[in-house]
Image (cartoon, rainbow, N blue to C red; front, top):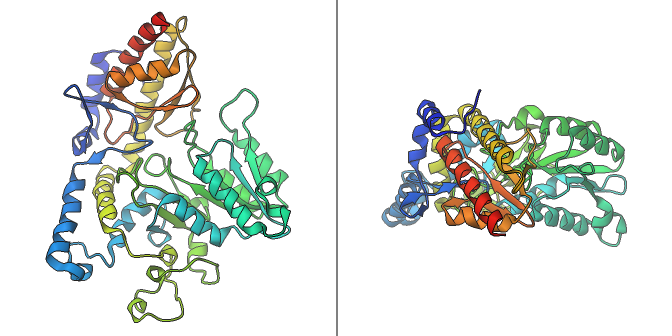
Length: 433
């Protein structure tokens, strides 16, 4: 497609957008009486307009039924997580019984590693990418330390293998990742990588990494916080062992919202796998007879601990209903086009104003909707300028602005307006400084 950095082009693109009406299903923060240019869905998605309605319905049913809402609410609370199963499976490329919505992200990662990180004197190493979200590093290090006991073999400094980009590069080359996997194949217990790196926005080749990990005899899992609802996932077909994600970013379920997990079919019915157990993972046919012996429900449901956080799940259901209507194939197609246009706009601005302030895109072509921009001069001031003029984006120390045009609710006009404000910001902040 031949992009153009002008208003006529973006108005035409938005008019032809088959997903344009979904923008009206969301509430935007306001700036001087206008919708902000909201490019921060990679951190917290916008609120669907139906979220309030869905949550109020549960409050009303609580009022009307009390405890009997577990069976008689409009969406009974006892099986509430099941109302999210089909849509969750669709966006993750899973079989329905391989997924369940529960807990929060890092909690789920720990619970999954109870089952899938089982180090011994031969296999104990964990491969992860340099610069993951800090919670992943903390979780991995603490899992290794938990198993260490008196043995220094499992200490984090020995157990953790950090993937490094090549000198002068910001992203990880797949061939380099596969080389590291092969180098550690005899000692490798687990590969645990973010499907999309939170800082650079790089989308990892999860299929190739999974195949290489399995060939090396390791378990392979992914943190999909920045991938779920953003990129195409085929977790079942790729043979991924496990994955976990949050729902407050691209899934628009609200701050601190409930997370989800995937456990591949080859593991999900294995009762012999160690796990931390709770009553909601027990077979529902015997759950209320309170048996002394835990009998896990088949599938990913058997990893549940506690009953559903209904209000949080109601907000997620409001968003997932929109995903079902839109379809991930259409969302991904628009995402590639929209982010491609943003990249074009950045290059146009860079060509015009590089003498004042260069902008470097550190996100590779394998990506979702996020672009991470390194600003050569006065990055913090430039970010503050666009923030003061109605752009909500994300600043990452020391010099990166993350922008994410989310296909569900962002428009080509948003990208155009962002580009014009970026031009102004470069002119004004550079001239002043």
